[in-house]
Image (cartoon, rainbow, N blue to C red; front, side):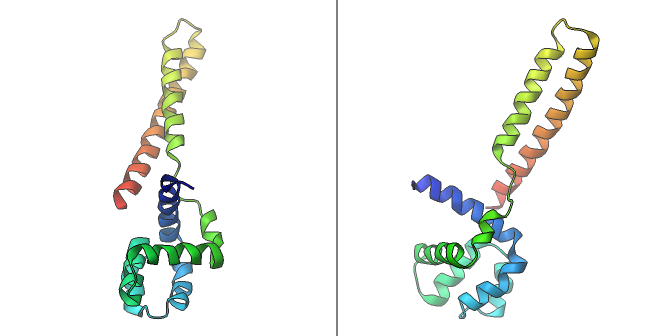
Length: 143
């Protein structure tokens, strides 16, 4: 597995962890018993904060804390990897391509009905593109 794959998986885990924080709090507390209730409240589902707290409380490097988290996830909470996270950037591109194709079709000399349908596909695809792009950008800004 390349470093890039590992980074992408960590990003996906960050989003899944944030979305599943309510279910994970007790499991985190039982796995890392040195974390206080205040620590758990401060973490608020942010994987980076958990990494920092484990590093502080257990006196290990950040990389070691990340390794502990990865091991714990794969062994004790593998379901978290199935949590649906941020819509794929691929969907954003699909909407953009659909909008471009619909725009091209809309300007070709076809029947009025086909042009009308192409215009609606264009508007819906453009809206989908904007929504997915906004979601992706906001989630990337949170990291």
